[in-house]
Image 1: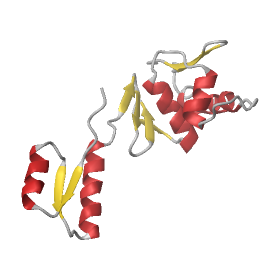
Image 2 (image 1 turned 30 degrees about the horizontal axis):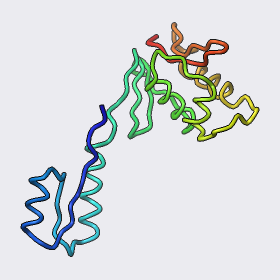
Image 3 (image 1 turned 90 degrees about the horizontal axis):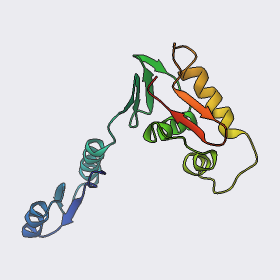
Length: 150
């Protein structure tokens, strides 16, 4: 279940500020407000609300730092590889069809007629699977790819 999005209330009225906090706002600020203070408050709320690390077996993905490690070994990923691995991790155990990956990872609602998914999966396997005794990325013709706890 998704966590509620942080809300920062801006108001000129002190009573409205207290009411906003009582109603569930994450923070409240009286205006006029210093732009640096407001930016700092937003930053704190975003960091606290940021996604927690995803773990699948020995693999840990940190969505905020955009980093990946397996059994304590850092895995250097380019942004698209990270996005692909994160989507597979969020769908752990389920075969994800190529068309779904194209839409969710590449933002394409059409098949470009290339092997872009296969190439990125191959690159991920080289970084995530080959250095370790068990594979985590499984592919099945007609079904797609899935990430398993290796």
